[in-house]
Length: 111
Image (cartoon, rainbow, N blue to C red; front, side):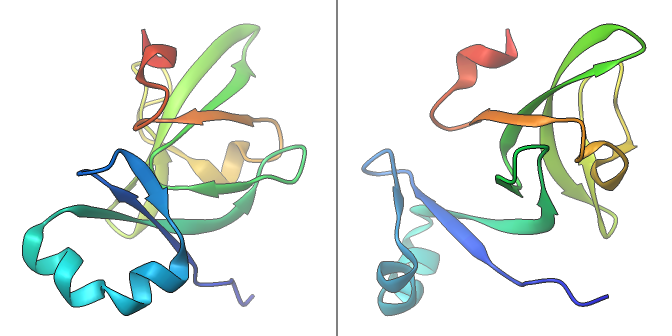
């Protein structure tokens, strides 16, 4: 199965996402200054069709318990990283989760 290779980028200096055209034109600057955080698309969509990226915060129910997890990439796989869901493959839950924010704009959702 082929998956789309896509990225998005967070500008730490201006606290905002930058568009792909900016990233392509300024990639060397962004890497040298360490001012940009690049996140990869997982190739998965949530239950309403929203693309899931590294750094997204997702909500789903696991054994009748509301879970709020962060999507991370480790050892070649995308995982949900909460205490209960730690190590759960994102591909197992993407069809029942909803993207509710990301770790840069919505940190309060993790509390």
